Image (cartoon, rainbow over all chains, first blue to last red; front, side, top):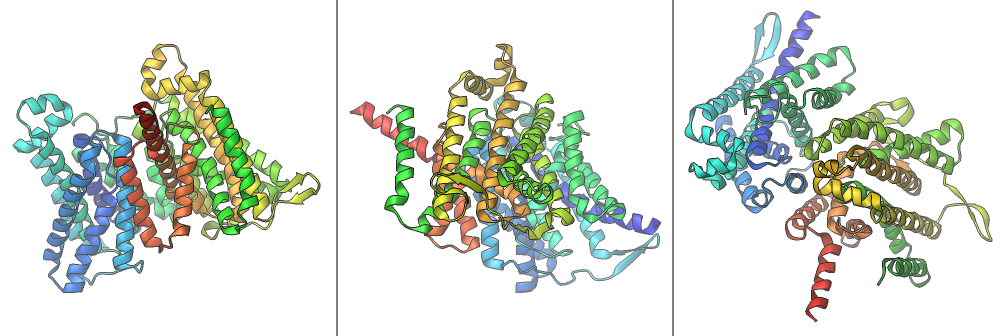
Length: 286
Length: 319
C-alpha cells in the first residue's frame, strides 16, 4: 500500500508538472495580454505530434525532434498572434472565443493529417530505476526533471533579466512600462509565442510517455487553467505548485476512489478556491 | 415596421411555409434550427443582454433532457408533466449555481470558469451513473409526446409536420417572452448590469437579483428546449452537456447577433443548415466551424443580423 501511494505520488507529480507548464503559459498570457489562451492545449497537441513525426516518421534523434516541435509551435504561435490574438488584446470574451475557434481548426487539421488512431512513440529511454522499492521508468524521471528545469529557468529569467522585469512592470502598470521604454507590442507577441513554445515543449515530452490523440489537448488545458486559478493567476512558481497539487490529488485519489472521479477534483478545487480565496493560494507576487 | 407586425409577418411566413415547400428534408432542418434557436435566444438573455458568459446552458439543456425521460420512466409521468418537472428541477439547480456565483461576485472569466466547472460536474455524473443514465452509450427514447389537436383529438406528436409546428410555437413563445423581458424595466436593469454593474449597484439596482433572474429564466427556457429536442431526436447522451455544446450555442449567438432578441435564430439556422447543404467530413466541419467563429468575431462583431441591419439603416440614412 505504501509503495502504491508513493508510486501514485510520483506519477501525480509528473502529470502535475505537465499541467504546470501549460498553467505557466496561461498565467503569462493572461498577465501580459489580458486573455486566456485556451488554444494552448491544442499547441501542446501540435508539439506532441510534431515530435512524434520527427522522431518516428523521419527518424531524427529525440532531442532534435523536441527542438523541432518547440520551433514549429513557436512559429504557429507567432502566426496565431499576428493573425488573431493581436486583435483581441485585453478583450477577454473575444480572446476566449477566438482561441476556441483556433482549437476547432487545429484539432480538425490534426484529425485530417494524423487521423484519430492513437499514436505511440518508440521508447526513447528504456529502462527503469528502483527508488525506495518502487519502479520508476527512467524516461518519466527525465521528463519530470526537464519540465521542472524549464519552469524554474522561466522563473529565473522573469526575475533576473531586463525583459523579465519589463514583463512584471507591464503586468502591474502597462502605461508606466510603456513610458519607461518597454516595447509593449513586442512584449505581448513575445509572451504569446513563448507560452505556445512552452506548450509545444510539454507536448513533445508528453509524446515520449503516452499515446497521442488529436483531442488530448482539451483535457490538459482545462486542468492547466484549474491549476493556474488554484495557484492564483499571475504567480509563476505558483503555477508549478498548482499543477503539482492537482496532479498529486488525482494520482492519490484514484487509489481510494473510482477513477471516474479523476476529473472532478480539479473542478471542486476550482469552485472552492474561487469562493473562499479568489486570489489563489500563492497570490501576492505578480 | 413595428416589432409586433414583424413578429406577425414572420409567424405567418412560418405557418404558410409547409404549404408551399413539401420537403421533409427542409422542414427537418428548420425544426432543428427552431429548437436550437430557442436555446440560443434564451442563452442570449444571459450573455447578450445581461453580459454574463454562462457555460451552464448546455448543462441546463442536457439535465432537463435526462430528467424528463427519467421522471417519465420511474414515475410514469406524461411527457408534459415530465417536462414541467425537469424545467422546475433545472430552475432550482440554476438558482443554486447562480446564487453561489453571484453572491461571490464572480465576473467575466471567473463566472465562465465556475459555471463550466458545475456543468462539467453534471456531465461527469451523467456519464458515470451507468445504472440510471446508461453512461456514454446514451438512451434511445421510444416515447413521443402527445398533444390535443383540433379535429384529431389527442395524438402522438410524430411526423415532421407536427414537430415543425410544435417547435415553431416553442420558438415563438421563447422570442415573445424574451422580448417582453428585454423591453421592460427588467431589461433595462439587465442592460445596466451589462454596461457597468458597479454603477448599477450604486444607482440602487439589485445586481444580484437581476443577474439571478436572467440566469434562471434563460436556463428555464433551455430546460424546456432540452425536453423537446431530446424527444424529437429520440436519443439522449452525455454529449448534450458537453463544453462543445455550450460553445456551439455561443457560436450561434455570435453569428446571428447578440443585440437583438430574435437574431440568434439566424445563427442557429446557418450553423444547422450549413453541414447539411454542403457535405463535409467531421474534420472539415470542425475547421469550417472554427473559421466561422473566428471570422465572425474579428470581422463581424455584431453578427449577421446586426451587420445587415446597420448597413440597411446606413443606406436609408444616406438616401
